[in-house]
Each structure stands twice: as structure tokens, then as C-alpha cells.
Amino acid sequence: MASLPPEMWHEILRYIPAQSTYPKLLTVNSVVFHILGQEVEEPRELTFHRDPAVAARVHSMDLDISLSNEPIDDILALLSSCLIHLVNITKFSSSILTQGGLKPICVRLRPLFEDIWASFGPRLGSLTLGVGVSQYAHFALDRSRLSGINSLYLCLYWANPTDPDGSSRETLLATTILPCLLSVKNQLQSLGLTFLAPINDSSAFFTKMRPFPHLRSVSLLPPSNATLQSISCALENCSAVLQTLNLNLAHLPIEGIDMGEISGCLRHSRVQTLIIQPQSPSANSLRGADSVGKLIYMVQETVTSVVARTNEWSTTEEFFSLFAALATCPLLEHLEIQINCLDTVVMGQLAQSLPRLKTLVVLHRMHYRSPQHESMFNALEEEEYSTWELKSLSIYRNTRTTPDRSEQPPTTAYQAVQAPQPISPCLN
Image (cartoon, rainbow, N blue to C red):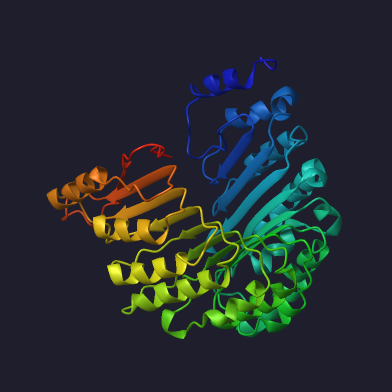
């Protein structure tokens, strides 16, 4: 069976019972292990990777571990026994969540990560880690194990209430995370930093980060305005080669943010892709649209793709403010946006503001289906959009079935707006 083609393996795996407590093989070239640490049986999906012919085809590994109870030793031993065959992995992602503050669990994971780096560490090009900063040392990373990394994403949190206070977090960042970043600064092309807890003073940490001469993609979720400003200053030296900026401002209040705080890394940038998640909900959401507009103005000469994600903008005034900023981007071809006030007027204004747009993806959130919404979508379908150069137009509807089921997760429906050629409706 080891010589079977990948598509045959995929069919075989369909008949293997999926158990939520098992590490689960999803495809033959990407393996995802979700380890929950409950009752342990022999995970048949995982044992397939002991076959070198199968394991050699695996190039991506996602290891999510959430452990709170015994037993875990059998699972860890089984996983380690498979690693000697997983030699061609170039992309690795891992998130370690210890429940109940059981720190010894992370200590017991260290031998597993030693085996991981020994197996495919030298071949890794992309690494994603989510871990408590105080437990970061148990990943057993050092400079030699990051020699091939060009894409690094770190999601940092404080694992439990007994972690050090804010003043000590700076020390933890400087002694654990900073050496990791500095060891790859000359080779790193993509960097992601997510901070899930506040830091009292991050300026010293980010000052020491510089320089990143080849950094082309940055993804940031700062915990405060001060951290945002520090990050901007740290990345200023790489702005000339920066092409993609993914900025999540969800933790920052609209009233207190000054978009000038991020201007440092955009002053001389050549950003082509801008992804923005605006700030937390506010009574004055127009200011959120204005702040995003200011960010767009900073990259207007070079940006070709904009993704603006929000749940709060709901009036045409807010979107017209945003459209005015987008209209100043002569090279813009792709736009992905959420529009809660979607109607023919808004779409018409969008077409007028962005006549050169090639691809448009719209997410429209409504509480429940109604005749008014169906009528609105019918009206959108009848529009010709003749002034547009669009090649692809998609509208995604996020709906609830009835207004009295607000506690239920929304169901997602898709509606492609039909339009004359050369527009081809696209559903993803």
C-alpha cells in the first residue's frame, strides 16, 4: 500500500473513523495533529506516517496541543516515533495550550520538540509558534535550528495568572523572544507578531529588533498604541522592501489611536497588499473608517490589494469616507470588504470611485433573511455595472434564519452577483 498514489490514500482515509481525541491526518501532503490528552488508543491515522513512502510526501505539519489531564505519554511517544520519517516538512505550525496552569506538561514536551528539530528542523522555511512567553524555552529553539527560516510567526501570551507582572514581561521578551528574532534578521522575509497581553514598555525590545533588511511581509496585532509606535519605528529601516502589511487594530480604542504612529514603517514603503482589521467597537465608528482611510493614503501610490475587515461599519457615510481614500489608489485591483449597509447606492458609489477595480469580494452581514434583503439582492443582480473593469465579483452573505435565534452561530450563504461579460462570478 505504500506505493499507492496520493489520491488513493485520500480515498482510503475517508473510511477511517474520525475520533476527536486522535491526531488526525487530513491530506497526504499536510498533516494536522490535534492532541487533547484524553483516553488514548492507537491512532491509526498517525501510524501511517511510520511508512517512509507516505511520510516522505508530507511537507506541512500543524501540531496543536491542549493538555490538562493524564495520560499523554503514549501519544507523545507515538508522535515521536513518527518523526523520524517526516523528513521533508518545510512548514511547521504549533500551538501549545496548558490548561489549569500545569507547567510540567510543557517541560515534558521538550523532548518531543528536540525530536522535531532533529527530524526536519534544518529544512524548515516557515515556522509558526503560539505559546506562553514564560514557557517559550521548552520549544528548545536555538540559532542553528532556525538557519533556514524565512517566515516566522509568533503568537505570544501569558500562560496563567501566576505569570510575571507587566514590568517583568519586558525581561522575558528580551531574554527569550529577542534572541530568536535577531538570529534570523538577515534572512527573514515574513514576520508575524501577535501580542495577547499588554506590555508596559516595549520600546527597548523593538529598538533592539532592527534591522530586518529583507523583510517583505509583516503581520501585527499590537496590545497598545505605544507598542504600535515602537513596532513602526523598529520596521522603518525595512520599509523600502515591505510589500505586505497585515495590521490588526482590534485591541486599540478608536478614540486613542493616531495613525501617524504607524507612519514610520510606511514612509518609504512599496506596500502592495494592505490588510486591515480596525479597532474595537465604538459609538463613533466613523472615526474607525477615517483612521483606515489615513492608512490607505500612506500607501496609495503602490497598493494593489486592500482587505478591510470590520463588523461595525454600517452607514453609507462611513463607506463613502473609505471609498474616497480608495479612489486615490491608481493601481488598486483587488478589494475585499465587509459592507453591512449594502445596497445599489453603495455599490454604485463603489463602481464610480473604483472604475479600474478587477476583483471585488464583499461580505454582507444581516441578522436574518427577510423579504427586504432578498429584494435588495435581486436589485443588485439587475445592475449592469457597465463602468467597471471587473473580472470577478462575489458577495458573501452571513445570515441567521430567524431573529429570535441570536444566540445561534450564523449560517453562511453565498450570492454571486451576475453581471455582463467579462465579469465571471466567483465563489470560494
